[in-house]
Amino acid sequence: MNESAFKTLLTSSPEHPPVLFHQRMESTLAEIVRQEENEMKESTKQALKKGSIWGSRTLAIALLITLLLGSVALAAGLGLFQQLSQMPQEDKRLPALDQVSTPLNQSAATDAGVTVTIRQAYYDGQRIFVSYKLEGERVAVEKGEGIPQVKEWAFQQEGMLYGRDYDSAMEGDEEIAAWLDGTSPRWARRTATAPHDGLSLSDGTWLDIISGNAYQQEDGSEIGWKECLVPQDKQADTLEVNLMLFTGATTYYQDEQGMKWAYERVGENVLIPFTVKKDSITKALTGQADAGKWQAKADVCLSPVDIRGEIVVSCPKEWADALVDWKENDVNPIADWQLYDGDTRVEGHNLRGGYRKQSENQLAYSICFQYGSDTKHLKLVPVYLDGTADPAHAIRLEVPTITYQRRK
Image 1 (cartoon, rainbow, N blue to C red):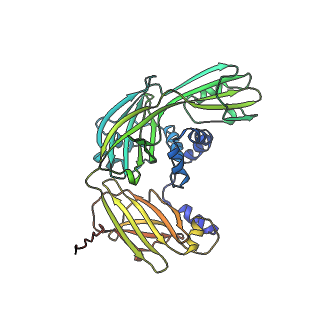
Image 2 (cartoon, rainbow, N blue to C red):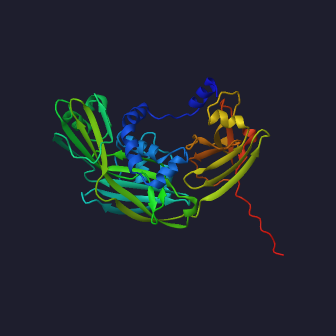
Image 3 (cartoon, rainbow, N blue to C red):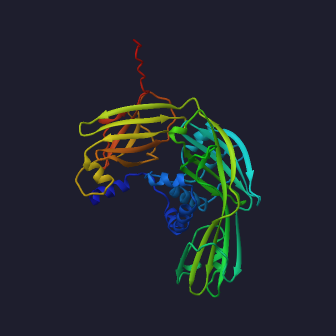
């Protein structure tokens, strides 16, 4: 892929995350990645190894950082999804979720008195959406002199000073930085309680997170939402699900030589069970297109919240070389897709824009658009790397036809 084509790809998206998001992500990355690698369930680790575009670890970072970027006032009479939708740059599907989700208001608490309440849930047959509120003393900071007792130091760096060289962008940071001034051996321990980034089924199957956000409120509580994927072999009309609340402690040690830190889980995980039932509205759609040089097949689901699925494109080997393997060539592959209703483009960009190499001559594209209308005129239009759309070779989406064979 040449430099100009790459710049075109980068600038093709109409919406960009705020600069502060990237700044906070860089400063928090080291700690969160280490915590997730050490403590996440094995099934989640395996899912990450498969190369999904939005891994659990990435979403865990985004959830934490967004929590620290602002707060939203709870408006009386609104569901939590609707209240969350009022945050700047929040997911545009939330108002629709507020309309179709089921109120639950199921709660559980830790021994320390931190309570989580699942406010709403929605299940479209493939994904589970939940909104929740977390209350109580979610974060506590202890301080002491000398060397603390820890199982094992996960990180140490000579010459590093906490307040000068390290900023986790987490609650209690200013207090810890003031205490760990490097003038004498001191330690600080931050204990935090939070929902895990995914969900789990009653049989222990882990449901990886696809999207979500969390926000700290002025009263110290936290509100948030998450969208999690149900594995295909576990999809059923009714599911028993758990949201997990866990507590972890990060211990920092600072002296004249440098800084160390360690992390460990504290106490038992708290599970909040709830039941979801598949809606009766979501429908499967499929379609194909043949442009000669490439052929595409789309399999998507249309729910009241969005239209989501995958497009598999059989294409020249050079397309995968350019998009996935970053090899220099002069090809102009499909880089994204647009959604049309008839001849009118549906407002908004592809929320799941991304692709992976399925074989030497096949690329799989993820698509998700905020669109819940039941229509017979939906189509997906390819957009090439140079930014040009190709409506002449759009994929027309239809309800799949089932063919029955007469018994002889």
